[in-house]
Length: 118
Image (cartoon, rainbow, N blue to C red; front, side):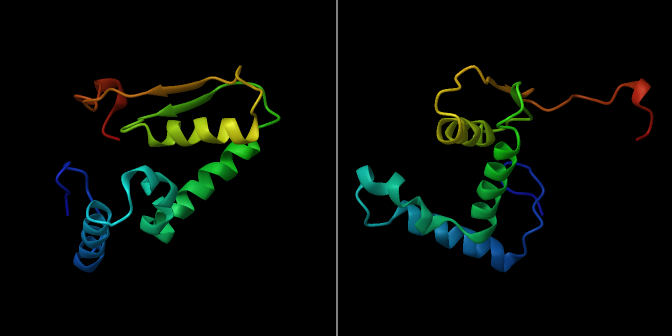
């Protein structure tokens, strides 16, 4: 099934309804706007929170390794934003580690002949 963005989803109808319900709760919650960011955990499910923890785990693996962090296919920039937060937490004085994101913003138009049928 494809979402409004055209991206294939493997969620069943029940999961999609739960996501819609949580989004409605987020949009209509009574939490004052200035406190909303501090309470985002109320709207995270296990899958999304696990993803954040996994990216944090990956970031911790490179702390002693010099170099940059690269994200290919940044989409909305969520991974880069998280890596920026992790850099601030794990390496507060290492502003030399660059975060670099690449994206075509339109997808790739076609596969080159050299790529074959794969």
